[in-house]
Image 1 (cartoon, rainbow, N blue to C red):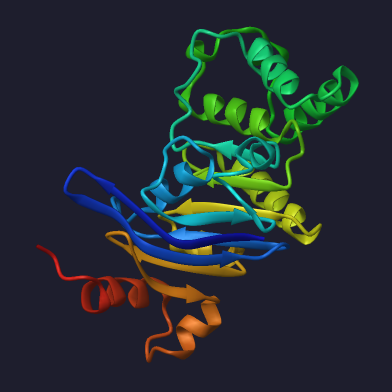
Image 2: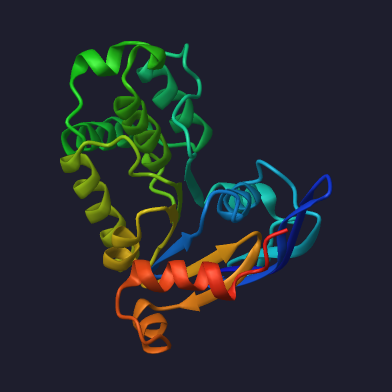
Length: 245
């Protein structure tokens, strides 16, 4: 389980997270929904220790991130919101590096890479070139494979479907479903409400670092006279959110 307990983060004078309290259970796909600047990426980057938060706590399996950071990192596979990282590294070197960091054996690494190459339709030419030589979509696949090589319990995916072709996007969604069904956690952010509706066990709607709603899609619809998720979301952001400055 992941528990964000009163998470607070400020950039200069801007409050990015304002006491966010969320619990994410084992065995579920949990979606972070919100406009740009809502706090989705700040939550994710706090969880994966890219940035530090200013207040509150993060607990993973009842362990405080501040005290057990290195242990918790081994449980997480992370896909950032942009695949434009480690661009000068060969794809194979990047995957080897990730496998060594997570202490994945050579045999297991090779088997998993072979499986993922089939799932995401990657050929040997893609495997042997530098990341910077690939298209945006192919870079996204490389980063996703790297995140999943260690078979981590927790998948944290920041806009993971961006740039993927329809078949690869479908296959990733199926992997997410299976991972959660096996008792693990998938936390992801998305701007695509239809994806959230079809995939998520529960969602959190954010605006300017504040939680507007946490629960299931059915609960969200039950509390609104509108049945369309997009319309409900836009209405909440407009009427229930923190007032614009």
